[in-house]
Image (cartoon, rainbow, N blue to C red):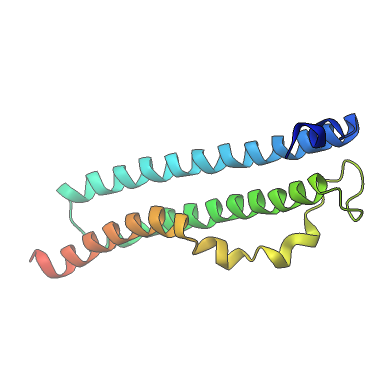
Length: 144
């Protein structure tokens, strides 16, 4: 985008883009906090499992991991939806009313399942899930 394109936006268009960017920023911060809670909770579970190996406890540890995975997927999908809206507003699409934050038209373009199994989600939550499964398998097959 050139400097002449930037100056050609009206103050209302710039404000609209700022509103959308603020939502994207909040969603990104929420996702970051969820990942932090996931690491903290998993660390507590894994630390306890090292000394008290139990397949039932290890399997129970999957519940918060999956819950945080789903919640983080929701936040990431919302962020992607608002990025689509941002692109439409930035491109001056006639279909976007002034100051609209409606992301409904983009729901089909950002499927929830695809977000949940995206590379970033698999890399983060998949590793934690695999580690928990190692504890489950170790407690079943390793110790008498």
